[in-house]
Amino acid sequence: MAFFQYFMSDKLVLATTGARVVTAEEEPRLHGIIERLVAIADMPKPKKIAVMDTHVPNAFATGRNPKNAVIAVTRGLLNRLNERELEAVLGHELAHVKNRDVMVLTWASVIVIAAGFLLQMLFWITLFGGFGGGHGGGGRRDMGQLMIIMLAVYVGTIIVYFVSQMLIMTLSRYREFAADRGGAVITGSPLQLASALQKISNDMYRIPEKDLRKVEHASAFFIIPALKGNAIATMFSSHPKVEERIERLQEMQRSMERSS
Image 1 (cartoon, one colour):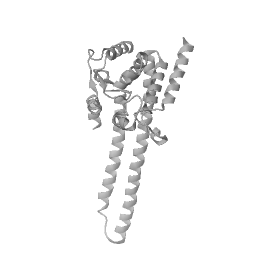
Image 2 (tube, rainbow, N blue to C red):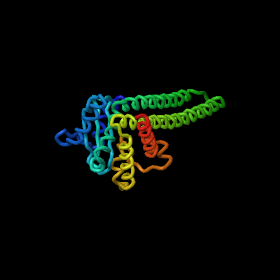
Image 3 (tube, rainbow, N blue to C red):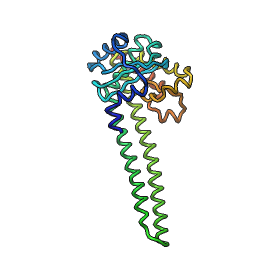
Image 4 (cartoon, rainbow, N blue to C red):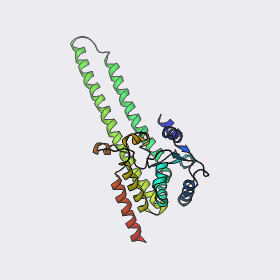
């Protein structure tokens, strides 16, 4: 399933989000910005450019490599951001493509899947292997030991799952920071990305829950998750806090100004 997700990620995401591939004739502004940015970044233009027909402002990128990438934006994003802010968001998404983040996160997921699968195998081997015990007092002791081992394996499986999920989410948050920085390098405007993130974040809290639920299945791909979470949700979030991202972009801008 992990390999299927890796090779079919572009088609799967387009199908699940309902994003429609658009031509340069249909969306000349969008295609024009992306063509300028890929020329600056020295990378191929994504294979598909798509638009999601929702007023929730957001964007995402997927695809196993730059040649098979998909960049998608929502109709709400196109209507909400100005030219420079839209350019900054698209720069962020192109940085994800250039950094091959889908490949990195897929391989990380394979390790988690393998660890969980091996623990489950150990659980069932222990279970069926233990039924060969004898009868009487010795058999009861063997069964008691078996139950303890099974419980230990079961608890271990849960711990491995949660620790692995936290590690993957930590990796994902790191890749978001890297895409922010990479996008700001491509456009040369960290503050424009900071402004776009602030606008999108503010809009998220004004959009009704029922509208966010319609796009929450794509939340992990979005530049900002389409969720309103608490502290626990933040711990398991695939994205860093918007405030932290903006702070880093502002520091990047100050660093660029000092060095110029």
